[in-house]
Length: 258
Image 1: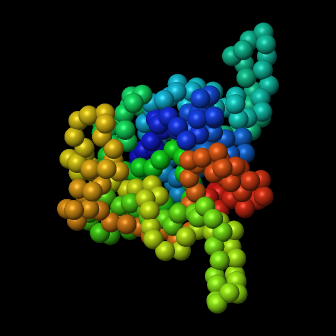
Image 2: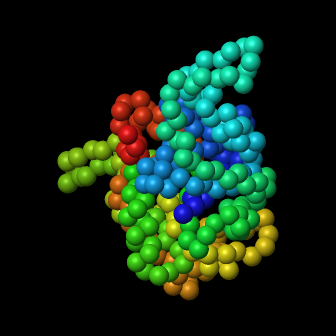
């Protein structure tokens, strides 16, 4: 089953970083967040990816074309550069990646429509800038159980502020920037059937999160998978720091692989 990852946006809220590279290449512990997302899916046995490229997509291509030399120790014989000895086996050797140029200015729905020929009857879709400790197999089982076109993962957004539990004037508990315990937002990690393309008319200004999702909901074709665990996007520089500090502290819940 194919995993489609939206990688084409300009990441304007991270402009200080994305002027140099596309947001999916921004690093967590030296590896792009895109790599972390792919590792989550790969852990559950899903190794075929379709990357929807746009802004600075050539840099994403270059990263994977040179993946071994960029991530592994190797010895090079300068007299014959074809002789490269890698000193460790790649754990991502079974990844199969399709790089799809979906346009510099296309929105998410348009990018999805343009890769229809690369996916089967059922496929997965997520954004190239968010990680979670989600069980992908359980998500897929939920999707298959309800016989609808689309499943979206609902997550609790992390709070920007500290949360206090108060009784009279006494603060009983204080949590610094916890995840909100009530209310869900779209956390990505979708599962879709081919019928989704009936909801995607022509035009690069088509946002998946706009008309198509609303129409699916109206038609009773959208179900939500409740994810109560960790979820964190990388929309701002502050969130870039949060993810890197989580990894450095040894508390990166999305690292489900060994």
